[in-house]
Length: 145
Image 1 (cartoon, rainbow, N blue to C red):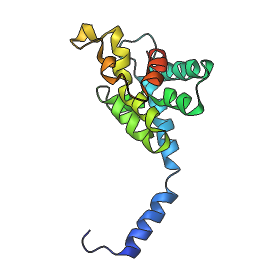
Image 2 (cartoon, rainbow, N blue to C red):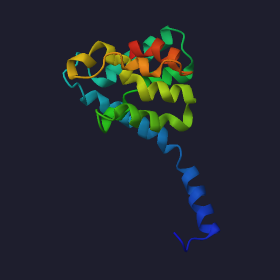
Image 3 (tube, helix red, strand yellow):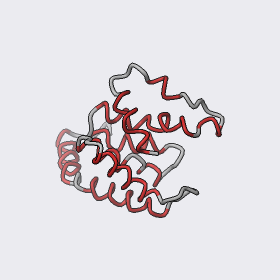
């Protein structure tokens, strides 16, 4: 890289921008792959994602939050344990800071239902109180259960 030129970097940036449409295709493929993941839940994770987006739409959420609701668990296609961060980072360039934070922390908001059973603080959501996005997360995270 020390020997690269401005012309080479311009070519790399140009090709990167040309390939940007593959992001949507990749996200759709990740969503589709969630159909194979149930992890002992009542429905597979694709159905869960579709239910979540439907609830957000019915609640009058913005298009951005509806898309975030649809994609909040796409990280599970790679790692269930790290799925909130994976999903948040994939969507980060396309969503507001508040929506990014909501995706990133959604597990803490859902944790009130089950964290105590796995040795975590069921009030983990409280650590985020006062954040500009807290109300948004609180409103929609329960729909993401």
